[in-house]
Length: 448
Image (cartoon, rainbow, N blue to C red; front, side, top):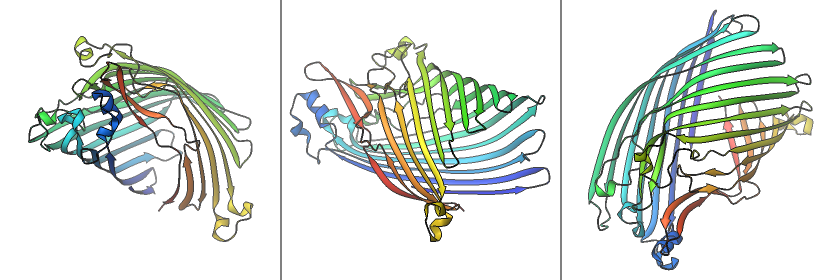
């Protein structure tokens, strides 16, 4: 992974000008020998050993992603009576996917090689203004107008599997123009207590999807539509004990129209992109406490209730179990977090040399994810997960070195549970994927 960021800022007499550039690139290569051998055994009734030949049962994935962003903006000085900002931004995303696979027991849809390229470019103008109505009440208005275009090209080449076309190529291009924005009011009840109410509009452009499970038969993919969301939020933030304790909470409601989802037809192993209405509502509560200048404690809990809405008979017919009232995939109903941290200058720990000028940062964290579904039909339900992580680093101001550890208890938990159909005896079969176990590593960052 490569990530480069630069930020140039200059204060003029009445405003601040900022130019910000960022570039990120991630290359990922995955190879799997004899994947899904147990599922293939369930389907066919044959022993798993019949599917353990890496020459006839494998997947090779080569994934490359990059994003370039350039932003220019001007903003009012911090002490201005009316806060404002305005700017323009340009971005370009590139994604390449190359897959070579041979899983004959799934039929021609899981064989051959596929090459996919997607380029997304966008330009936007944005602005925001914060208007103090009096000493306690403030109105904030912001908007962003975006033009975005997507262009893709994909090719499929058969490996000779019976039923598959020898070669198929498809391409497409679409453009989107949309406006997003936010309006909010805040009220300062006292120097230690404020509340807010906000309404915002979000937008996700449509597209073509990275996969087409029918390319092997020469059928082009169907583009999916854009989706919108209206978010209503009501919250408050307070500080106590001479600002050593901070507590905040919020209620929210999301009204999603044409939310983008994918269904899976396990009878012929094909996927389809759908746009379905949905909603979510819940609350968030967070707190942070500093018992001293070096130690801090934090915690939070969140509850989210989700549901699909207005699922048509046509959409329900595409996948068994797809109904209004189903929960949104990957969203836990309950989640929680807690952490303890310590920060101190190196010299106070008796460190010498260059380490004395650095700052030691240590953190131990716990995260809880409640039960959740991995598909819109709510067949694959995942159990709750408890995760522990830690981080220990030395910060030198313009650079940092750190050790980290994730899932330190080596929790074995599923990240995917998809229904694949029925076995040779008619019983349901699920394909599951487990998340990474305990992971430790060393990292470094340079700021310039």
